[in-house]
Length: 389
Ligand SMILES: Cc1cc2nc3c(=O)[nH]c(=O)nc-3n(C[C@H](O)[C@H](O)[C@H](O)COP(=O)(O)OP(=O)(O)OC[C@H]3O[C@@H](n4cnc5c(N)ncnc54)[C@H](O)[C@@H]3O)c2cc1C
Image (tube, rainbow, N blue to C red; front, side, top):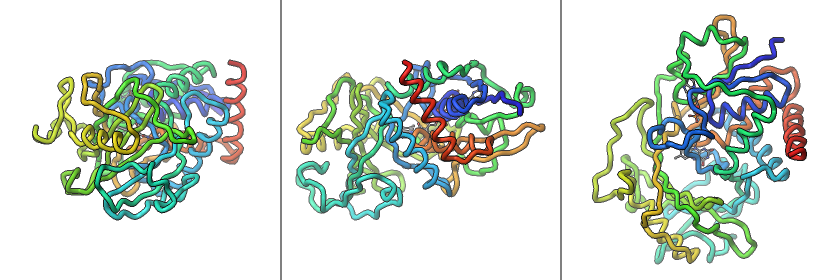
């Protein structure tokens, strides 16, 4: 067997796939235009999705006919990493609350300690003043605290002997790569390197605000609280009139406040901005004013926490690459010029969420071992590296 594997892409998918294979004994090299852990300039890189995740481990805004198994595999690895005190892996009590009746999505059944609305402590349910008739649920949710998790993932990969070469590849380079096995994790760059069978190329743009140094929000049991809150459509809606959510995800480095889900196409640069009456502008970046206004109301009413639209809010705008809404995640193998190419892209708003599930699936395509055996080996290797650190 040719043991050398080339992974294209230095985002969370490339890094997790390469690390997994490296830990399983393969020699891997990541070739990438940009490396997430080294790129601080977000504004000129909205298509580099791994600069932006919030990062909840919930399968939001992603489409795959194998979602459940990929999610559950990933989630079980995150829970194991949590037990090993892997940097940045935390558990939150996460609320999803709505002002209009909403059906529970399937993924709620895959979450631990799901609590229906009527079992929640009303004092702790995120809400706006004088709005009644809420519905929703809460569950335990893994978060990957990005400022801690991503640099450690990168460090672990290098400690395990993986190498990273910084280079922007062209389609002509692909046939000459020195490996019979290529893992394509080039995100929105994928269709420029390989033929993509999807005729839709959906991208969903998201606005975020980082409030540095904001305190963790906790309950009486010292659990960290986070929420997604969807008001009535008359308060905050997308272009088609569907109600939109706002959210607050507390992390060690402050709060990540969202959000928006504006649909466009891969490569699009002429995004239509909402008119000035409904946007805030900070640092030249326009974003929906509801991200501040609604979060401010919810944080003050429920958690006695204050959010000022002050100058310490840092805005950013990134793209979630959804491809299509039937089976947008491309996780499949093909033969090109006698090489095996395994594609791993189109994770939408859930690339971190699915990162371990997809990486193990790739390992399983290359190895005769069963997937749970591979998972056990990866965790054992991570545990021994953490113990030796
Ligand atoms: C606002 C926002 C919030 C989000 N929140 C969450 C969340 O809470 N939870 C969650 O799970 N996910 C979330 N996501 C989604 C998540 O960020 C993405 O799904 C994930 O980062 C995709 O990672 P990736 O490695 O597949 O792609 P990318 O991060 O886009 O990486 C692609 C890589 O390929 C390289 N590349 C591209 N073309 C070439 C080329 N020609 N040659 C060499 N290299 C190339 C790039 O340089 C880059 O390194 C969010 C995304 C956004 C925008």
